[in-house]
Length: 546
Ligand SMILES: Nc1ncnc2c1ncn2[C@@H]1O[C@H](COP(=O)(O)OP(=O)(O)OP(=O)(O)O)[C@@H](O)[C@H]1O
Image (tube, rainbow, N blue to C red; front, top):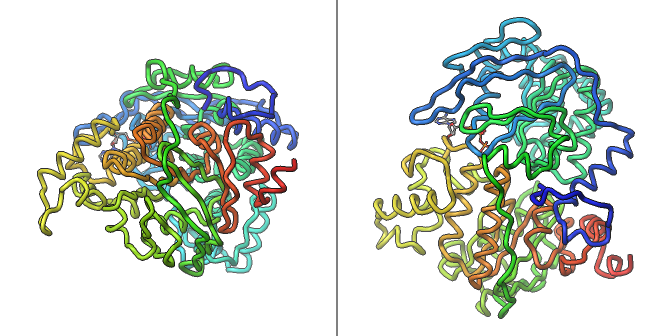
């Protein structure tokens, strides 16, 4: 996101100074390479919502929402975390019933009783959290979602045809467990395309994608739009919306507050419309690299399971006050590296040290006690238990460091107080600490998970995708909290697929590729070409030579 609101310019040599341009540059070049333009032939409105309202206990999630989407239009739904975007699209997809208002699709009333009815009416949806069965193949997963699946061979042929037509490479016979996040998303998209939808809803589709995968997705969406499909697109990535969407409806606190052509506004202006005020810029100042806190020496680990990635001779050094950014395509060892650091995977002696102390054989509890904390990527399931309240979820990682569990007994009052502290400090929008984690909007749960770790004052914090699904304003607050943590003398490792985020935060940048970590390089002055090479697995010497 371009918080400065400035133009990107074309100086490709040093993008660290204007990190938010990185993705925009990659996308611009992809668009021109593919011969695509942003114009569409818009016709009459295909979908209409009028006066839609929905109330949850204590929350007005949608309030008098009216908007329309035209045929062939890529229409963005913008808003802060908890603004009501997901609730709105769930109503269109028949997962939630509106309390008030009407919808129409293709000139006919649209009031789907369930997703099956919505699909029959021509609505398809790709969710933020995929609903695939790991043990089944791509084709089997797709068949499960179909009303009348054709015989297996015919289905495989249809999948192959659609994946080829829309530039979404996928092998129907592969087991889903073997697929990266980007490939899993392709399964979901192809599942939707086989329904030949009139309206395709995408909820934060690029949050799990690399820039290259995102480019591919946009080319697919543009192709669909050019064929007349309307696309309703939820994303927090404002540059992406400016580059690819024809229209945007902006929600705040459940109400439509604006509607605009996003191409006519800077990212900063869009963010201001969302939050109803100005965006804060992150402050990187005031940090000094101090003593070495964390050291990995030649850490090699076998893949934890058939689908995992082996870590190969990973070495790194992290100093106090420093943020090390680790980029890379998902599935290249990010989860394994986080698990090796958190202690979920044990390591050979002498390979991991915190402040000189060998932690290889120490489990997660011992590492937390020593000050090495980690926040994994999967917030619902791994980082938080969906059915536990937020207070109960603090116990998962903060039990001993915050004195929430003493002598084996839970201090519920302390857990509640700590959850309240996190909610307050990280502006988590929720009725309170008694709320179940699953009732939070995606971005708000992410803020809670990161806040729960940051407020434990770790010596070293390792985070994977810290602002996944977090809105622009909150993402900037989360990033600031990581910078502040480093300013207080901690070391921070940020693993992310968001290149702009890594360039904005990190002092040194390296990339994971097939379980190998490239030589870290100072972020300042790093060019896009160099980053591309590092992400692609080039070694230090090759990078140094370009
Ligand atoms: N099933 C539910 N039960 C209770 N409250 C809910 C439920 N679903 C959503 N909410 C609340 O409704 C509000 C709107 O949530 P919604 O998920 O629609 O927001 P969003 O704009 O999609 O947010 P994000 O960008 O974080 O995904 C939030 O305050 C949320 O906590």
